[in-house]
Amino acid sequence: MKLFLDSAHLGEIREAMSWGAIDGVTTNPSLVAKEGKDFFPLLQEICETVNGPVSMETTSRDAAEMVEEGRVFAKLHQHIVVKCPLTKEGLKATRQLSAQQIRVNVTLCFSPSQALLAAKAGAWCVSPFVGRLDDISADGMGLIRDIKTIYANYGFSTQILVASVRHPMHVVEAARIGADIATMPFTVLEALVKHPLTDSGLDRFLQDWERLPESAKAWKTAGATAARRARTAAVPASRRR
Ligand code: E4P
Image (cartoon, rainbow, N blue to C red; front, side):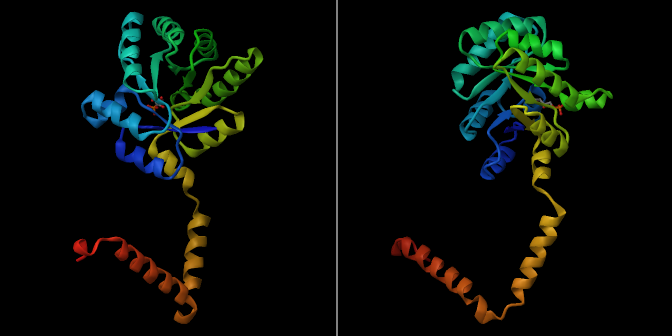
């Protein structure tokens, strides 16, 4: 399963990339507005930072306008995936953009019937919002199961991108079901790493290591000194302090 970061924050995106943890990024108008930056330079920088798909949302209710915006986004960078909402106009735009080989992420999906229509329109992926369904006492992950079954029944190639993820178990459950992608905020990505037994286990290992006599740990000090010497030697004499 691919993991995407749901963020327009360059610091978070760079940090997650450095863990080798994410395969792409999703954004929406609310996330972009939070950054308070010029839209196109921000979009360009995100696309250049991420080695994978970057979903950017159109901001219109009208199909023709969505298509126009989508074409502008797509010209900006090859990583762009255009987000269109799951409305009649959004489906029209999806059909037209997909016919022009522009990848579309159909967003704001809350039912199996909507997901079926997104696939029929040729969407590259569909984004069911599990957290927002859970928020109103509906079954977010149940929707993912339904879409998985429907797409498998008919061999649709539209990918299931689990969105509005609120906690690590959403991600684990999405993986169990076999969703293609899960997108999550940075806080959830961080929570995926954490385990108290990892932390206490590492504390114990490092404390035990400290109990060794200095002479037994000499290789480490020697290694560090050698590395420092090599780094110094690599700097031209004129630039050494
Ligand atoms: C995904 O593409 C959406 O931007 C996102 O997951 C929405 O999440 P929220 O319900 O936490 O706003």
